Length: 454
Image (cartoon, rainbow, N blue to C red; front, side, top):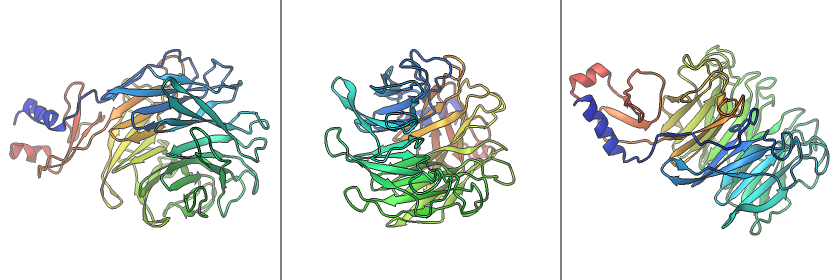
Protein backbone atom coordinates (compact mmCIF):
# COMPACT_ATOMS: atom_id res chain seq x y z
CA UNK A 1 0.00 0.00 0.00
CA UNK A 2 1.41 3.41 -0.96
CA UNK A 3 2.11 6.00 1.70
CA UNK A 4 -0.61 8.37 0.45
CA UNK A 5 -3.18 5.57 0.40
CA UNK A 6 -2.06 4.45 3.83
CA UNK A 7 -2.69 7.90 5.29
CA UNK A 8 -6.01 8.13 3.48
CA UNK A 9 -7.06 4.85 5.08
CA UNK A 10 -6.20 6.21 8.52
CA UNK A 11 -8.07 9.46 7.84
CA UNK A 12 -11.14 7.62 6.59
CA UNK A 13 -11.24 5.21 9.52
CA UNK A 14 -10.56 7.83 12.18
CA UNK A 15 -13.85 9.64 11.43
CA UNK A 16 -12.29 12.66 13.16
CA UNK A 17 -13.47 16.02 11.89
CA UNK A 18 -11.67 19.23 12.74
CA UNK A 19 -8.10 20.30 13.49
CA UNK A 20 -5.92 18.18 15.72
CA UNK A 21 -4.62 21.27 17.55
CA UNK A 22 -6.08 24.67 18.34
CA UNK A 23 -4.60 27.79 19.90
CA UNK A 24 -7.21 30.25 21.20
CA UNK A 25 -6.14 33.88 21.05
CA UNK A 26 -7.10 35.79 24.17
CA UNK A 27 -7.73 39.47 23.44
CA UNK A 28 -6.17 42.00 25.79
CA UNK A 29 -3.54 39.65 27.20
CA UNK A 30 -0.45 41.46 28.51
CA UNK A 31 3.09 40.65 29.58
CA UNK A 32 3.36 38.72 32.88
CA UNK A 33 -0.35 37.72 32.90
CA UNK A 34 0.63 34.01 32.97
CA UNK A 35 -2.40 32.62 31.18
CA UNK A 36 -2.55 28.83 31.40
CA UNK A 37 -1.04 28.13 34.80
CA UNK A 38 -4.39 26.62 35.77
CA UNK A 39 -6.87 25.04 33.34
CA UNK A 40 -9.92 22.79 33.55
CA UNK A 41 -12.44 21.30 31.11
CA UNK A 42 -15.97 19.96 31.40
CA UNK A 43 -18.14 18.89 28.49
CA UNK A 44 -18.34 21.83 26.07
CA UNK A 45 -16.53 24.42 28.19
CA UNK A 46 -13.03 24.95 29.50
CA UNK A 47 -11.58 27.57 31.81
CA UNK A 48 -8.12 29.10 32.10
CA UNK A 49 -6.80 31.33 34.85
CA UNK A 50 -4.89 34.59 34.34
CA UNK A 51 -3.73 35.22 37.92
CA UNK A 52 -1.71 38.34 37.16
CA UNK A 53 -4.22 40.14 34.97
CA UNK A 54 -4.21 43.82 35.89
CA UNK A 55 -7.52 45.15 34.57
CA UNK A 56 -9.01 45.38 38.08
CA UNK A 57 -5.76 46.31 39.78
CA UNK A 58 -2.17 45.09 39.92
CA UNK A 59 -2.27 41.25 39.83
CA UNK A 60 -5.95 41.25 40.76
CA UNK A 61 -6.40 38.38 38.31
CA UNK A 62 -9.04 37.05 35.93
CA UNK A 63 -10.13 33.89 34.16
CA UNK A 64 -11.53 33.07 30.73
CA UNK A 65 -14.24 30.52 29.97
CA UNK A 66 -14.29 29.15 26.42
CA UNK A 67 -17.20 27.32 24.80
CA UNK A 68 -17.10 24.78 22.00
CA UNK A 69 -18.49 25.86 18.61
CA UNK A 70 -17.40 22.77 16.67
CA UNK A 71 -14.81 19.96 16.65
CA UNK A 72 -11.81 21.55 18.37
CA UNK A 73 -13.18 25.00 17.56
CA UNK A 74 -13.74 27.44 20.41
CA UNK A 75 -15.24 30.88 20.84
CA UNK A 76 -13.22 33.95 21.86
CA UNK A 77 -13.87 33.30 25.52
CA UNK A 78 -15.75 35.11 28.28
CA UNK A 79 -13.67 36.99 30.79
CA UNK A 80 -14.72 36.68 34.43
CA UNK A 81 -13.35 38.63 37.39
CA UNK A 82 -14.12 38.85 41.07
CA UNK A 83 -16.91 41.38 41.65
CA UNK A 84 -14.97 42.71 44.66
CA UNK A 85 -11.53 42.42 43.10
CA UNK A 86 -8.55 44.07 44.77
CA UNK A 87 -4.93 44.38 43.69
CA UNK A 88 -2.77 41.29 44.29
CA UNK A 89 -5.70 38.94 44.98
CA UNK A 90 -4.37 36.55 42.31
CA UNK A 91 -7.87 35.53 41.23
CA UNK A 92 -7.31 32.74 38.71
CA UNK A 93 -4.39 31.09 40.48
CA UNK A 94 -6.61 27.99 40.51
CA UNK A 95 -9.67 27.13 38.41
CA UNK A 96 -12.08 24.27 37.84
CA UNK A 97 -15.31 23.73 35.91
CA UNK A 98 -18.11 21.17 36.00
CA UNK A 99 -21.21 21.55 33.86
CA UNK A 100 -22.66 25.04 34.34
CA UNK A 101 -20.53 25.85 37.39
CA UNK A 102 -16.98 27.17 37.55
CA UNK A 103 -14.90 27.85 40.65
CA UNK A 104 -11.93 30.21 40.80
CA UNK A 105 -9.46 30.65 43.63
CA UNK A 106 -8.07 33.98 44.86
CA UNK A 107 -5.68 32.84 47.57
CA UNK A 108 -4.45 36.35 48.48
CA UNK A 109 -7.91 37.88 49.04
CA UNK A 110 -7.92 39.95 52.25
CA UNK A 111 -11.61 39.96 53.20
CA UNK A 112 -11.21 38.34 56.63
CA UNK A 113 -7.50 38.87 57.20
CA UNK A 114 -4.42 39.55 55.13
CA UNK A 115 -3.98 36.72 52.62
CA UNK A 116 -6.80 34.70 54.16
CA UNK A 117 -8.06 33.91 50.64
CA UNK A 118 -11.36 33.20 48.93
CA UNK A 119 -12.96 31.26 46.10
CA UNK A 120 -15.76 32.27 43.75
CA UNK A 121 -18.36 30.04 42.11
CA UNK A 122 -19.81 31.26 38.81
CA UNK A 123 -22.99 29.80 37.33
CA UNK A 124 -23.82 29.95 33.66
CA UNK A 125 -27.14 31.57 32.78
CA UNK A 126 -28.79 32.62 29.54
CA UNK A 127 -26.89 35.91 29.72
CA UNK A 128 -23.50 34.48 30.62
CA UNK A 129 -21.48 33.48 33.66
CA UNK A 130 -23.01 36.16 35.83
CA UNK A 131 -24.26 34.44 38.98
CA UNK A 132 -21.46 34.63 41.56
CA UNK A 133 -21.15 33.19 45.07
CA UNK A 134 -18.09 33.82 47.24
CA UNK A 135 -16.84 30.94 49.36
CA UNK A 136 -14.84 31.41 52.55
CA UNK A 137 -14.20 29.14 55.54
CA UNK A 138 -15.92 29.88 58.83
CA UNK A 139 -12.55 30.00 60.58
CA UNK A 140 -10.62 32.13 58.09
CA UNK A 141 -7.33 33.51 59.39
CA UNK A 142 -4.29 35.44 58.28
CA UNK A 143 -2.13 33.74 55.63
CA UNK A 144 -4.45 30.74 55.19
CA UNK A 145 -4.09 30.93 51.39
CA UNK A 146 -7.63 29.59 51.03
CA UNK A 147 -8.16 29.19 47.28
CA UNK A 148 -4.65 27.95 46.53
CA UNK A 149 -6.15 24.94 44.75
CA UNK A 150 -9.77 24.29 43.74
CA UNK A 151 -11.81 21.56 42.06
CA UNK A 152 -15.48 20.93 41.38
CA UNK A 153 -17.48 17.84 40.42
CA UNK A 154 -21.27 17.94 40.23
CA UNK A 155 -22.67 19.44 43.43
CA UNK A 156 -19.39 19.41 45.35
CA UNK A 157 -16.49 21.84 45.30
CA UNK A 158 -13.21 21.51 47.17
CA UNK A 159 -10.96 24.43 48.10
CA UNK A 160 -7.60 24.13 49.85
CA UNK A 161 -6.13 26.43 52.48
CA UNK A 162 -2.48 25.67 51.88
CA UNK A 163 -1.03 27.19 55.03
CA UNK A 164 -3.96 26.81 57.43
CA UNK A 165 -2.60 26.37 60.96
CA UNK A 166 -5.65 24.83 62.66
CA UNK A 167 -3.67 21.74 63.69
CA UNK A 168 -0.05 22.92 63.61
CA UNK A 169 2.46 25.10 61.81
CA UNK A 170 1.17 25.36 58.25
CA UNK A 171 0.19 21.72 57.66
CA UNK A 172 -2.71 22.89 55.46
CA UNK A 173 -6.34 21.82 55.12
CA UNK A 174 -9.16 21.67 52.59
CA UNK A 175 -12.87 22.42 52.66
CA UNK A 176 -15.55 20.62 50.67
CA UNK A 177 -18.69 22.63 49.91
CA UNK A 178 -22.03 21.11 48.91
CA UNK A 179 -24.39 22.98 46.60
CA UNK A 180 -27.83 23.23 48.22
CA UNK A 181 -29.52 25.62 45.79
CA UNK A 182 -29.18 27.41 42.44
CA UNK A 183 -25.79 28.81 43.45
CA UNK A 184 -26.06 28.41 47.20
CA UNK A 185 -23.51 26.38 49.11
CA UNK A 186 -23.26 25.06 52.65
CA UNK A 187 -20.59 26.20 55.12
CA UNK A 188 -18.18 23.50 54.07
CA UNK A 189 -16.67 20.36 55.61
CA UNK A 190 -13.06 20.79 56.69
CA UNK A 191 -10.62 18.00 55.87
CA UNK A 192 -7.16 17.58 57.33
CA UNK A 193 -4.55 14.87 57.13
CA UNK A 194 -5.01 12.45 60.05
CA UNK A 195 -1.22 12.41 60.57
CA UNK A 196 -0.47 16.01 59.64
CA UNK A 197 2.77 17.65 60.63
CA UNK A 198 4.60 20.96 60.32
CA UNK A 199 4.77 22.39 56.82
CA UNK A 200 3.24 19.37 55.02
CA UNK A 201 1.44 21.77 52.67
CA UNK A 202 -1.58 19.50 52.58
CA UNK A 203 -3.72 21.04 49.83
CA UNK A 204 -1.05 22.02 47.35
CA UNK A 205 -3.18 20.16 44.80
CA UNK A 206 -6.78 18.93 45.01
CA UNK A 207 -9.14 17.03 42.72
CA UNK A 208 -12.60 15.54 43.07
CA UNK A 209 -14.61 13.01 41.08
CA UNK A 210 -17.97 11.70 42.26
CA UNK A 211 -17.69 10.49 45.85
CA UNK A 212 -13.90 10.69 46.02
CA UNK A 213 -11.52 13.60 46.57
CA UNK A 214 -7.73 13.50 46.48
CA UNK A 215 -5.41 15.98 48.16
CA UNK A 216 -1.66 16.26 47.79
CA UNK A 217 0.77 17.01 50.63
CA UNK A 218 4.02 17.34 48.73
CA UNK A 219 6.20 18.24 51.76
CA UNK A 220 5.03 15.30 53.89
CA UNK A 221 7.83 13.02 55.14
CA UNK A 222 6.81 9.33 54.75
CA UNK A 223 9.98 8.50 52.78
CA UNK A 224 12.20 11.29 54.04
CA UNK A 225 12.01 15.09 54.07
CA UNK A 226 9.74 16.48 51.35
CA UNK A 227 9.14 13.01 49.88
CA UNK A 228 5.42 13.78 49.80
CA UNK A 229 2.11 11.94 50.00
CA UNK A 230 -1.52 12.18 48.94
CA UNK A 231 -4.78 11.37 50.69
CA UNK A 232 -8.01 10.07 49.17
CA UNK A 233 -11.26 10.83 50.97
CA UNK A 234 -14.62 9.13 50.36
CA UNK A 235 -17.97 10.82 50.89
CA UNK A 236 -20.04 8.87 53.44
CA UNK A 237 -22.94 11.31 53.93
CA UNK A 238 -24.51 14.36 52.33
CA UNK A 239 -21.34 16.32 53.04
CA UNK A 240 -19.41 14.17 55.45
CA UNK A 241 -16.21 12.41 54.47
CA UNK A 242 -14.16 9.58 55.92
CA UNK A 243 -10.76 9.97 57.56
CA UNK A 244 -8.95 9.31 54.30
CA UNK A 245 -6.59 6.74 52.83
CA UNK A 246 -2.95 7.76 52.53
CA UNK A 247 -1.09 6.84 49.35
CA UNK A 248 2.64 7.15 48.77
CA UNK A 249 5.17 6.21 46.11
CA UNK A 250 6.38 2.64 46.63
CA UNK A 251 9.92 3.77 45.74
CA UNK A 252 9.71 7.25 47.19
CA UNK A 253 12.67 9.12 48.58
CA UNK A 254 13.49 12.52 50.02
CA UNK A 255 12.70 15.60 47.93
CA UNK A 256 10.50 13.69 45.47
CA UNK A 257 7.58 16.10 46.07
CA UNK A 258 5.06 13.32 45.50
CA UNK A 259 1.66 15.02 45.68
CA UNK A 260 2.68 18.20 43.88
CA UNK A 261 -0.06 17.45 41.33
CA UNK A 262 -3.09 15.16 41.54
CA UNK A 263 -6.07 14.10 39.45
CA UNK A 264 -8.84 11.53 39.86
CA UNK A 265 -11.43 10.02 37.54
CA UNK A 266 -13.60 7.02 38.33
CA UNK A 267 -11.51 4.22 39.84
CA UNK A 268 -8.15 5.77 38.97
CA UNK A 269 -6.05 8.52 40.53
CA UNK A 270 -2.73 9.92 39.37
CA UNK A 271 -0.12 11.73 41.46
CA UNK A 272 2.91 13.64 40.22
CA UNK A 273 6.35 13.54 41.86
CA UNK A 274 8.13 16.20 39.84
CA UNK A 275 11.50 15.99 41.64
CA UNK A 276 11.84 12.20 41.69
CA UNK A 277 15.29 11.13 40.47
CA UNK A 278 14.28 8.48 37.96
CA UNK A 279 17.18 6.20 37.03
CA UNK A 280 19.53 8.58 38.80
CA UNK A 281 18.54 11.63 36.76
CA UNK A 282 18.05 14.49 39.22
CA UNK A 283 14.55 15.99 39.22
CA UNK A 284 13.59 14.12 36.04
CA UNK A 285 10.26 13.32 37.70
CA UNK A 286 7.69 10.56 37.73
CA UNK A 287 3.96 9.99 38.11
CA UNK A 288 2.08 7.17 39.83
CA UNK A 289 -1.34 5.83 38.89
CA UNK A 290 -3.43 4.18 41.61
CA UNK A 291 -6.41 1.87 41.04
CA UNK A 292 -9.26 1.67 43.53
CA UNK A 293 -9.84 -1.96 44.52
CA UNK A 294 -12.50 -1.41 47.20
CA UNK A 295 -14.25 1.27 49.22
CA UNK A 296 -11.43 3.81 49.46
CA UNK A 297 -8.88 1.02 49.17
CA UNK A 298 -6.16 1.51 46.56
CA UNK A 299 -3.42 -0.62 45.06
CA UNK A 300 0.28 0.18 45.49
CA UNK A 301 0.38 2.15 42.25
CA UNK A 302 1.94 1.92 38.80
CA UNK A 303 4.87 4.18 38.07
CA UNK A 304 5.00 5.95 34.71
CA UNK A 305 7.94 7.94 33.41
CA UNK A 306 9.13 9.66 30.25
CA UNK A 307 11.07 7.46 27.84
CA UNK A 308 13.18 10.48 26.90
CA UNK A 309 13.39 11.89 30.41
CA UNK A 310 16.33 14.01 31.46
CA UNK A 311 17.54 15.88 34.51
CA UNK A 312 15.31 18.74 35.69
CA UNK A 313 12.49 17.84 33.31
CA UNK A 314 10.03 17.97 36.24
CA UNK A 315 7.85 15.27 34.66
CA UNK A 316 4.81 15.27 36.96
CA UNK A 317 4.60 19.04 37.34
CA UNK A 318 1.01 18.59 36.14
CA UNK A 319 -1.16 15.50 35.70
CA UNK A 320 -4.62 14.68 34.42
CA UNK A 321 -6.56 11.45 34.03
CA UNK A 322 -9.83 10.65 32.30
CA UNK A 323 -11.22 7.29 31.22
CA UNK A 324 -8.43 5.18 29.74
CA UNK A 325 -6.04 8.09 29.24
CA UNK A 326 -3.53 9.87 31.45
CA UNK A 327 -1.50 12.95 30.59
CA UNK A 328 1.59 14.27 32.35
CA UNK A 329 3.31 17.61 31.92
CA UNK A 330 7.10 18.01 32.01
CA UNK A 331 7.31 21.76 32.53
CA UNK A 332 11.12 21.81 32.51
CA UNK A 333 11.77 19.58 29.49
CA UNK A 334 14.44 20.94 27.13
CA UNK A 335 13.27 20.30 23.57
CA UNK A 336 16.23 20.06 21.20
CA UNK A 337 14.51 22.39 18.72
CA UNK A 338 12.71 24.80 21.05
CA UNK A 339 15.20 25.23 23.86
CA UNK A 340 15.60 25.04 27.64
CA UNK A 341 12.41 24.68 29.71
CA UNK A 342 10.21 24.78 26.61
CA UNK A 343 8.16 21.94 28.11
CA UNK A 344 6.49 18.76 26.87
CA UNK A 345 3.28 16.81 27.46
CA UNK A 346 3.00 13.02 27.44
CA UNK A 347 -0.09 10.91 26.78
CA UNK A 348 -0.49 7.37 28.16
CA UNK A 349 -3.21 4.83 27.35
CA UNK A 350 -4.39 2.15 29.77
CA UNK A 351 -4.01 -1.32 28.27
CA UNK A 352 -5.19 -3.41 31.27
CA UNK A 353 -6.01 -2.98 34.94
CA UNK A 354 -3.55 -0.25 35.94
CA UNK A 355 -1.19 -1.13 33.10
CA UNK A 356 -0.17 1.74 30.86
CA UNK A 357 1.54 1.80 27.49
CA UNK A 358 4.63 3.76 26.55
CA UNK A 359 3.96 7.42 25.94
CA UNK A 360 3.23 9.62 22.97
CA UNK A 361 5.04 12.96 23.27
CA UNK A 362 3.42 16.25 22.34
CA UNK A 363 5.54 19.44 22.16
CA UNK A 364 4.11 22.91 21.68
CA UNK A 365 3.94 23.91 18.02
CA UNK A 366 6.10 27.00 17.61
CA UNK A 367 7.24 26.87 21.21
CA UNK A 368 10.29 28.62 22.64
CA UNK A 369 12.74 28.33 25.50
CA UNK A 370 11.20 29.06 28.88
CA UNK A 371 7.57 28.61 27.78
CA UNK A 372 6.81 26.02 30.45
CA UNK A 373 4.46 24.10 28.14
CA UNK A 374 2.48 21.73 30.34
CA UNK A 375 2.27 24.01 33.37
CA UNK A 376 -1.51 23.63 33.29
CA UNK A 377 -3.16 20.40 32.18
CA UNK A 378 -6.73 19.10 31.97
CA UNK A 379 -8.50 16.47 29.90
CA UNK A 380 -11.97 15.16 29.17
CA UNK A 381 -13.64 13.26 26.32
CA UNK A 382 -11.57 14.06 23.23
CA UNK A 383 -9.59 17.10 24.39
CA UNK A 384 -6.47 17.92 26.39
CA UNK A 385 -6.13 21.55 27.48
CA UNK A 386 -2.50 22.57 27.92
CA UNK A 387 -1.23 25.80 29.41
CA UNK A 388 2.18 27.38 28.80
CA UNK A 389 2.18 30.09 31.44
CA UNK A 390 5.52 31.62 30.40
CA UNK A 391 4.92 31.69 26.65
CA UNK A 392 5.46 35.10 25.07
CA UNK A 393 2.60 35.12 22.55
CA UNK A 394 1.27 38.49 23.77
CA UNK A 395 4.30 39.76 25.65
CA UNK A 396 6.90 38.27 27.97
CA UNK A 397 5.29 35.58 30.15
CA UNK A 398 1.82 36.47 28.90
CA UNK A 399 1.04 32.78 28.61
CA UNK A 400 -0.72 30.67 25.98
CA UNK A 401 -3.18 27.82 25.54
CA UNK A 402 -3.09 24.79 23.27
CA UNK A 403 -5.94 22.31 22.79
CA UNK A 404 -5.07 18.85 21.53
CA UNK A 405 -7.75 16.55 20.15
CA UNK A 406 -6.60 13.07 21.10
CA UNK A 407 -8.32 9.95 19.85
CA UNK A 408 -7.54 6.28 20.16
CA UNK A 409 -8.52 4.12 17.21
CA UNK A 410 -8.44 0.34 17.15
CA UNK A 411 -8.45 -0.91 13.56
CA UNK A 412 -8.49 -4.58 14.43
CA UNK A 413 -5.36 -4.95 12.30
CA UNK A 414 -2.91 -7.49 13.82
CA UNK A 415 0.06 -5.38 12.77
CA UNK A 416 -1.03 -2.31 14.76
CA UNK A 417 -2.09 -1.87 18.34
CA UNK A 418 -3.24 1.73 18.53
CA UNK A 419 -3.45 4.90 16.54
CA UNK A 420 -3.39 8.41 17.97
CA UNK A 421 -3.97 11.89 16.76
CA UNK A 422 -1.08 14.01 17.93
CA UNK A 423 2.17 15.77 17.11
CA UNK A 424 5.21 13.79 18.25
CA UNK A 425 8.74 15.16 17.88
CA UNK A 426 10.48 11.94 16.91
CA UNK A 427 10.38 9.75 13.79
CA UNK A 428 10.92 6.19 15.02
CA UNK A 429 7.95 4.06 13.93
CA UNK A 430 6.01 7.23 13.12
CA UNK A 431 4.59 8.60 9.90
CA UNK A 432 3.82 12.27 9.27
CA UNK A 433 1.40 13.91 6.88
CA UNK A 434 1.42 17.70 6.49
CA UNK A 435 -0.60 19.54 9.15
CA UNK A 436 -2.77 16.62 10.24
CA UNK A 437 -0.75 13.91 11.91
CA UNK A 438 -1.77 10.42 12.83
CA UNK A 439 0.71 8.42 14.84
CA UNK A 440 0.83 4.64 14.56
CA UNK A 441 2.44 2.53 17.26
CA UNK A 442 3.58 -0.54 15.37
CA UNK A 443 3.92 -4.07 16.71
CA UNK A 444 6.37 -4.76 13.89
CA UNK A 445 9.33 -2.80 12.62
CA UNK A 446 9.09 -0.61 9.54
CA UNK A 447 11.04 -3.11 7.42
CA UNK A 448 8.81 -5.98 8.55
CA UNK A 449 5.72 -3.95 7.72
CA UNK A 450 7.09 -3.24 4.25
CA UNK A 451 7.82 -6.93 3.74
CA UNK A 452 4.22 -7.69 4.64
CA UNK A 453 3.09 -4.93 2.26
CA UNK A 454 1.20 -3.11 4.97
